[in-house]
Structures are given as C-alpha cells and as structure tokens.
Image (tube, rainbow, N blue to C red; front, side, top):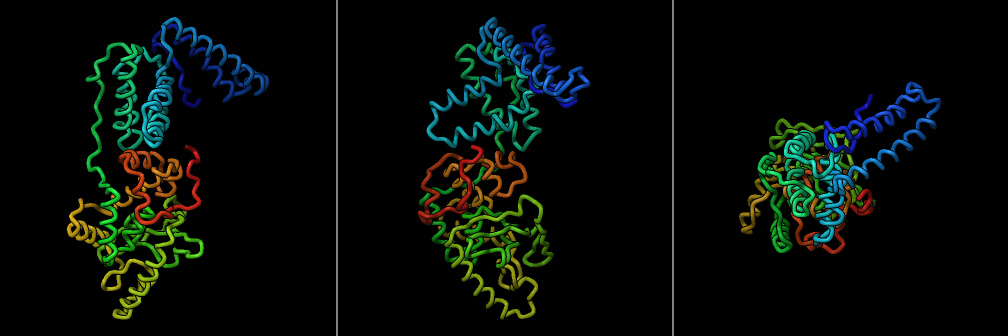
Length: 391
C-alpha cells in the first residue's frame, strides 16, 4: 500500500487519533484496492470516501473546539503566510519565497499534522531533519521560517511555552553571493566592455548561463531572427584548451532554448571577426573553429581565465570581487523582480530539480528593482516566457 496521506491528529497515542485514523485509512484502501475492500464498484468506494471525509472533518472541528485550538500545524502555516505575512510584507517576492518553502519543503515532510498546541521541539526536529535530507540547506530554510512563524503563535497563546533552544539550529549556508547596486553594475559593465571576455560576461549576466555552458557554445547555437540561444553542450573539463571535454546535454533539462536580448548579437558578430583573426594566425588550430569562446591560441578558454578577467575588472574599478556564478545570481534576481514563477526560473536556469532553484533563489536578497533596467529599458532575457504561471 502507498504511504498514508497526512492525517491531522491530536496526539500520536490519543484515543481521538486512533478513531480518526479508523475513519481515514479505509478511504485510501477503497480508492487503491477497489473490490478487495468489499465495495462492488469504484463509484461506491468514492461515495464511501466522501461520506467518511465529511465525518472526519466534522470530528476534527469538534476536536478543535473542545481544545480551543483553531489550527492544525499545517493550517497555521497557511494562515501565518496569507494573513500575517501578507499584511506586513513590502513586496510580493518575499511572500512567494516563503510560500515555496512551506509548499515544497515543509508541508511534504509533516509526517503527521498535529494540532498547533501539541507541537513540541521533538516534533519540529523530526520535521527539520526530513527537510534537510530532502534538499540542500532545506533544514536552514525551514528552520528560519518556522522560528518566525512559531514566535507569532506563542504571542497569541496558541502555542504552549516551548524551549526554542531545544530545536536544532541549522546554520546559514556559507559563501553568500555578491550583488551590485545599479550604480555599481553600470561601472562594472563599462569596464567589462573593454575586456576580451565581455561577451562571456554578458551571457552570464543576461542569460544566466554557467561558465561550462558558455564555454561549450557554438555560433550555430544562436538564432538571430528568433533571438534565441540553445544550450546543447557543456565544457566539463578544460585547461586552456588542453584536456578539453565537451558533454552533450540532449535529453536533459540543461538542454534548453532561451530568448536573449538583441544587444548580444552585435557583440556576437564582433567576436566572430576576432576569432577569424585568431584562426588565421593559427591555421592548424581548426578543432574549435566553430566555437565561440576562443583564447589567444585559438583554443577554448578555461573557467580560470574568465575568473581572472573578473578579478582584473573589479580590481581596476574598486568593486567587490565576484565570480561568474555571482553574475548568474544577479540574473536570477532580475527574473524574481519581474515576478517570474519558480517553475519558469528553474527552467531558464536549467536546474534538474525545483528544490535546487528554491535553495538558489533563497540566497538572493530583496533589493532595488532598478537593477533589471541598468543596460536598457527593453531588457528582457526571456521574452515570451509565462511569468506568473504556477505562482
């Protein structure tokens, strides 16, 4: 039998819990096993399910009334998000991120949904342990949200005195990404425009590509008329052209086609001319002639080379040091400020799991929305994407 669905209970060993379980368990069995449970048809099983579900909710309501407790733990999280946080929030993105944490990380790992007044540190520690095992830093994001939510519950006397010190603390992930203000970003791009790596920087900042995806690009991956780029391969190992390994992405979520800003195509044309000059100086270097990112010896550049270029630019401008991954974070921040849904952001970034996107986005602070319009008012790296789908 499949794992039983979440069942609101009072206490794990309470008589009411046992009675409610008797109501719900047969419901799942009838749907999954049909005739084996004694029902003559699926319709009869469905009817029995609906009848028992009504009875279950009636008894749960009576239990809440008897205990003077308006919420189960799961219901309280929904209430806290929609009624408490919504009133005190200055922006929709903060609410969306909290909703992601509740719906994708916490709710699926409430093995038993108890009345709010019965929540204990042991119960919370079991939930947090499951959240941490589910995705990278899931324990931290769940801990941070639950800490704030339960404080509000305690103020309203819905939660008994609890020693929060007994709840396991999950530390903040190390190495926060670097984000520039609009003014800093303008300074950075001005300096970067004089670099031999300007196109690679733009592809990270305005398309959200990883260094490996950028280094694996060919001219044929760009479609000028459609204004798209297709990510078809990734450079997984490269020492300035030596030991270069290119991996095909066909059949994976990384293999994707994105709309890109029109201002990238003149830069692409300039790069093609520069590479032709390189190839003329090294006529025997034909192995990578169709690739975009060629170094001074007409071989594919390395990620180390791109990192060194960023270090030079930030040192000359006096800006905080950053790496190519930080540019990808800035791109994701722009998407979030434009209210793109988690599903859409995940697809654009090429993540294989939405939990990866959730962890990625939760490291992005809510900042000045003008950042997205630094280069041009028409900037929209993913033209035509469904921004609010699934939000």
